[in-house]
Structures are given as structure tokens and as C-alpha cells.
Length: 113
Picture 1: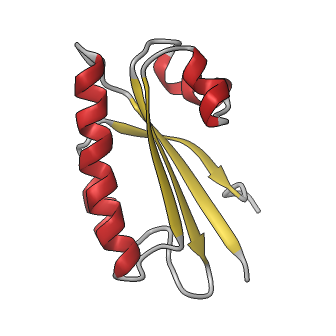
Picture 2: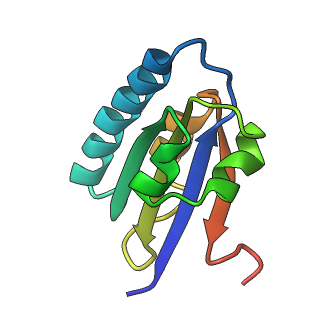
């Protein structure tokens, strides 16, 4: 199995913590459907509302801050693909994230490999 992943972080400024939580729920529902449709191997969606969430959720603060500049709340999405079965460039995933205010923070293995 050859795995690939993408991490996305919200680029938009949320007015409230609930706005980030609402976005997390929206993406969670949509990604659950894509997982059931076998468009990806796994996902994780987290609303980061306070600094303690980084440690509690095991999220690299630097990855998030590369997009947010340290601003919270933020939404974090991690997608995992089995390259033998899924494409990280799937059109459905692209359309879900397009125009959503989510920025690509990390791609692994790196796109240069």
C-alpha cells in the first residue's frame, strides 16, 4: 500500500468559534460520504478553537500557523489516500474544497518525490 496525504487549513477568519465548528461539521459529513464512496482512505476534521487544542488533538501547530498566521479559530482537514485505489486529485474532493476557504498546508509525500 502506498499512502499519500493532504492537510488543509482554513484561510478565512471566523467571527466565532461556532462558525469553525459549523464548517467542521459540514466537511465531516461530506467527507464521510466520500469515504463510503471509496474516494479516499481516511480523513480527519478538527475545529481548533483554542491553543490547547493543538496538543489535545495531536496537531502540528506550525502546519496550521503556516496558513492562519496564528489566528484562531481554524478548521483542520487531513485526507489520506491509498494511491493504489484513490487519487488525491479526485474531482469530487477538489470541488468540495474549491472556494471553501481552505488552503493546502502540507502534501505528503512531498509533491517533488
